Length: 374
Image (cartoon, rainbow, N blue to C red; front, side, top):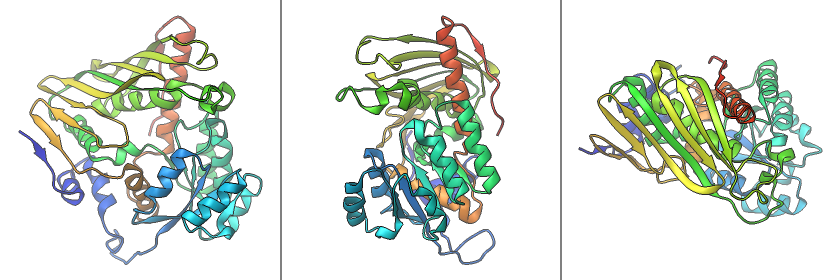
């Protein structure tokens, strides 16, 4: 039996109970705020770091309803001209890394989206908060747990909102899986697997291969997807983790991890078997429950996502994940809608990933987790 949804509004209406309420809020037009008053403001977003993913975000911002691209920050003068012209951003709203703090004076920019190498996440997230701007930080949150906590503290001190660039939480198949987990649609989850991996090749000097810039390798870049899948796919909390690292191309991946397998023990006895790599292809989530199962494959690419359960095929609209993500965060600011990926979620994942590296260093020893509550 297929699970068929015609459009996102109808989809969110179906999910109005429990976890679906967050998605329902994100589809309400701005004229229908919780206070019943008209709110037609589009929040301005400045992208910091104009790499390939920032281009995808910039394109997505041409489709958003509640936010728009109003600022750019780059260390490359040529990009100031080409991006400014392509996306109609005036020179007065374009900054470099040195004069970035002047963004505080620019009322056209409400949100700063940090899309820089990992080593720069904390610096620019904190500077954005001090400038009075709300912050979206791309994953992983930072280089380590310490920096992640500093970002959260800076945003709290400045009274600005903080969100993670976890686009999947705004994606319909993922939201349905979260509903399965919350409502125990197929009974109690027992076991889950997830893989997040792709074959990285090309420039051996790219920043993702440099520990000083990336902090970690496949785990920081792709492993966070597998960890996220295990958590929202079962609705359970991680208690402990053990992990092993393998390298089939040690020269290319000499500074960072290439392939990691993880075993995560979760509440209610759920076991998660996870894999990540920069030297193979994996893109799936599978959850086995007492009375059935559900699977996403692909589970975390840019789309389309595909899903099936023991009851039949899942069928939801294809959405622009980045546009949905940024609109949901804008509605969190404008209307108080739920923050689907708060900074504490990014901190939690950093805590898990640090424990994974600790386990690898200790020969696969089990590491008990003491995770942030949110």
